[in-house]
Amino acid sequence: MAQKDSGVPISVSINYFGDPYFDGEPIPTIAFGTNPIVRCKDCRAYVNPFIRFTDGGTRWICNFCSSYNNVENYYYSPLTSGVRNDIEDRKELQYGSVDFLASADYMNRPPMAPTFLFVFDVSKSAIDTGYLQIITASILKAIEEETFPGGDRTVVGFLTFDEKVHYYNLKSTLKQPQMIVNTDDDHDFLPIPEDLMVNLADSKDLVIELLTQLPVMFADSTEYDTNMDHIIKSIGILTKVTGAKVFLFESSPMSAKFPHLQVTQKPGVKDRPELLKPTVHLFKNYAVELSHMYVSIDQFVISGHNTFKNIATMSDLSRYTNGRFYYYPRFNSQMQGIKLDQEFYTALTVKSAWEAVGRIRVSGGYRQISTLGNYLVKMRTQDLLCLPVCDEQRVVFYEIEKAEQSMDGPKKKQTYTNSTDTHVFVQTALLYTSPEGERRIRVHNLAMPYTDVATEPYEYSDVNTLAPFLLKKGIDNLETLNPNFLSTRSYIEMLYSNIAGSLNRLYRNNLPESIDYLACYCMGTLKNEIFSPSQNIQANAYLDWINFLRFQLRHMNADEVMNVIWPQIFRVDDEGLSQENLPSLLNLSRQ
Ligand SMILES: [Zn+2]
View 1: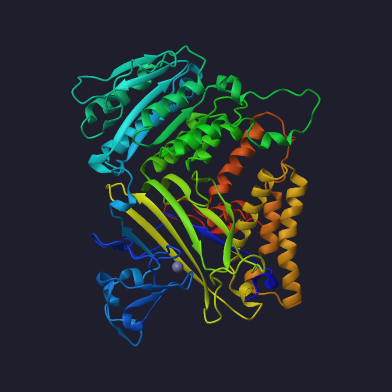
View 2 (view 1 turned 135 degrees about the vertical axis):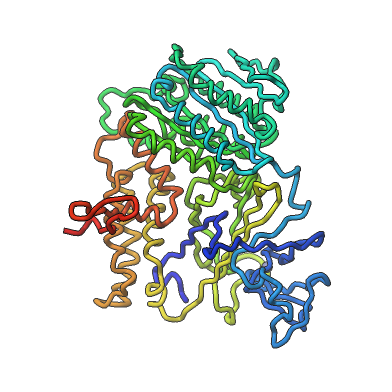
C-alpha cells in the first residue's frame, strides 16, 4: 500500500501496561529460567507470533528486520509443515501480548518495593477546604480494606508543609509517630530515611495513628505561606534512593507568590497566549531529575478560591514523571468531596508497573515520526521513555510513516520490507518491576496488513482513534510551534482536508460508513475550549482551567477523548433514574 497516496495517517495508541485479555485470564507469563529471552540479534525485537522458523527449526527470521537468527539449543523444536512441534506450549508464539520474566541482566539494582509518599499542604487555606479529612479517610480505607498494591512489601512515608516542612518518624519500635520540623534547607539533622519511609505492615499502627491525628493536629493552622521549592527538594531527599509514587496535595493561594510561579503583569495587553506554556523550566528540571530516580508525582491542586495557580508550570512535575494531575477550582467539600475521594482512591489503588521504561519498534522501512502524550525521553537515549510509575490507564500515541529510501550515502544493510511481506509490525516493550517484586517485560505486538487497494485503509480505519489522534496532533502543534489558536485550528483543518481530499478522489459521493463521522468529530475538536477559548488568555483561573484540560487530553485514551469531542447525554425526563437502571446514552445532536 502506498501510504502517502492513500492520505491516511498511521497512528497507534499504546497502553504500555495494558492487559488486553478480557476473559478473566491474566496476561501469559513466559519464563526462560537462566537462559536469555529470545531476541533478534540485530534489531533486538522480542520473540513474537509473527517470526518464522526455517531450516528445520534451527533458524528464525525476524519480522522487523528480516535477519536470520540461530535458534539456541534451549529453544529448539523440530518443525512439521513449518510449524514448531511444541507450538501449544509456546504462548509467546501464540499471544500478541505477554509478560517475559526478566533475568538479572535487566536489573541495575534489586527490584523496588511499591513505595508511596503522601505530601500534604497544611497551611490555613488548605485546611479550610476540608480536603485533609477526605484524603486521610481514603488512605485509612485502603489500609483497612487491604487495597494498597504490594501487600507486605508496601512502603509509605508522610510529609506535611506550610512555610516549614514536617517529617514523620514512623519507625516500628516507636510508641507513637514523631514529628520533625525543618525550617530551612539544612537536612543534616534528619533521621535516616528508613525511619521516615517505612514498611506499612511493620508500622501499621503508627501510620493509622498519624492519619487519624493529622486533621486534628492542623485544625487550628494559622500559617498562610507555603514554600514549594523547599517541599520539592524534601520529596527528592526522601525518594532518591528507592523511587516512589508521590501524592502531592497543594492548596494555598500563596503558592502563586512563589517567585518561580509568579507571572509578570503586562497592563494593557489583552491576550497573552504565551501563558499556555510554562513560564519557567524549573518544575520540568525537577521532574527530569525525579523521573530518572524512578519517582512519579500525582498532583492534586485544590483551590478554595478563584485564584491563578500557574498550572501550566506546576503540572510539569506530573507531566514529565508520568504522573496524574487533578485540579479542583473553587473546591467545596460538600459538592466535590466525593469526586476528590474517588479520584484519589483510584489513583492510589490502581495496579501499576514500577521503575519502568518503555520503547516502540516498527518494521524496517517504517519509522516513528512523533510521540504524543505526557512523557519524558530517558537521557542519553533516542526513544526510551521514562515511565517511573506506569498504571494500566497511561496511554501514548505514536505516529508512524513509511520512510523514504535514501539514494545518498553508502549502501546500508537492506532493512526495507521485502515484497513477500504482508504486514507492518509494531512491538512495544515495557521493562518494569511488578508490585510483587518481579522484574518483567510486557510486550505488545501488532500486525497491520498491507493492501494494494487505496480505499481499504479507509474502510478499515478506526475513526474513533483517528479523531483523537488529530486532536493530539493539534495540542502538539499548539505547544511546540506557536501558541496561536487560529493557526492551530487551521492546522487541524488541514489534517482533515488532506484526508477528505483523498476521500473525494477515491469515493466521490460514496463515502465509507466508517468515515461518515470524522467531519463531525473534527468540528467537535475545533470547538473545544483548548482550541477555541471563550475568554482572552490572561493569568487567571480560566487559563488554569484550559491548561488543565490540555494536560488531561494529552494522556487520555481514545475512548476518553471521544467523550470530550462527541459528548453524550442521559435523557432523564421520562425515565426513572437509579444506580441499577440508567437511561441509555444519547448523542448531544439529538433533538
Ligand atoms: Zn530483527
